[in-house]
Image (cartoon, rainbow, N blue to C red; front, side, top):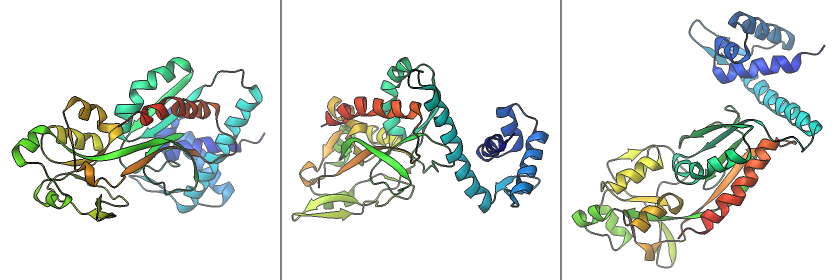
Length: 302
């Protein structure tokens, strides 16, 4: 009997957990059994899949390429089984979702219980982070991204768009005054992120043209939710998406600044998912749910 799919499953779990023991716990195997299976797989393939040391297990270049192929094949097998059973069976299985802290906190979490009620057999694995995540390596099923996409290996479905605004708290403005032109931001503390982005400057409409202004400040953060809270607390000025701060502006916790200079500053919000032939049913229903629920929410934002 051909056991290659079983070997692939064990191999992918070793990659994802980073150890033989971690994979063994997930698959109810001993670390020794996992190690022997990986060694047998390496001998059959004629390549070294991992570089081993006494302290760590590091995937090799050949192993990384084999991992990508294994993920694709295992997904195809899973989808083929679901397809054979038919659509009459309720969607089920593990659904891995990744999105930013602000979007997850303010848009996704308030509605995720509705999805759970609709599809109780789907197990949700929800990860909120503003850090760059290797979606293939982490085997993410659906990721929600803001702004331009730079990976053509994934399929994408736009959920909507959100305007970005420069904001500060009433307390900050009372202490430091309100800037009336973008140039006056030079005299204010402006927050930015500590991770690499396509562009860190803020866009403004000046002399009928969009110009990008470098802002300064002595505080950086790795996620938008922390930046929002620092801004509400009166520590400085931020540029944030309205999907993130609309309720704060409505409640008066934040005040929009320099609106007349806004250069049509918007960002698309997109669901991305694996570019595979067969889309698992759990992924399909989740994307449809996002389109149905998130789209109207975004379109209603100021």
